[in-house]
Image (cartoon, helix red, strand yellow):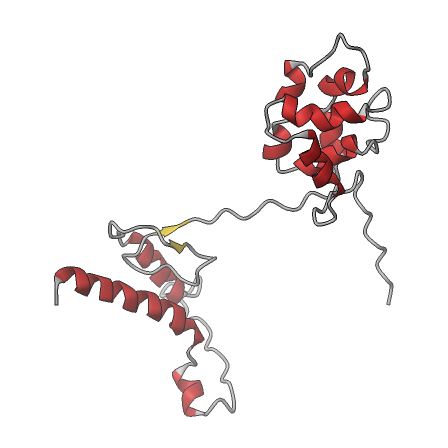
Length: 212
């Protein structure tokens, strides 16, 4: 067998073992036929008698010292994947941000530079100022808000965050004029589409806990 095929086979066996090993019953449980589970023995005390030894923790520390092979990082690192496989590199998985529960803080923070353009019918303000377009970007990057929150401005239900009623035509054209590639029709369709869950202006309070 060629060396590359042997290496590939070894890696496949390691991955298969890592996936199957946590699912296998212990030898004691297998002998008992699964009828009864024995209590796990307590960790052995250390030689000095100060703290118990945890063999699995020592094994994990040893595995962490083993250098990885120069292979693609296909597998995720623990805790997403059950264990770290020796010699096999892994990649860290960033957890997704929590869902946005309200839009008022983000709109109050970022929309003031757009107020004059959005509420004016004056032809002397034909396009949003650069400061307004600059604050659109955080709606796509700041995990505490969402671009769908702009639908509250488009739909005119942004409350008293702006000094006057919103000009609907200007609100729907804001993203296009700021270079984000969404036409007025795109924005109108998105904000009216029930498949998109638009976060509420204010967070919905949690129901009171029942007393037993």
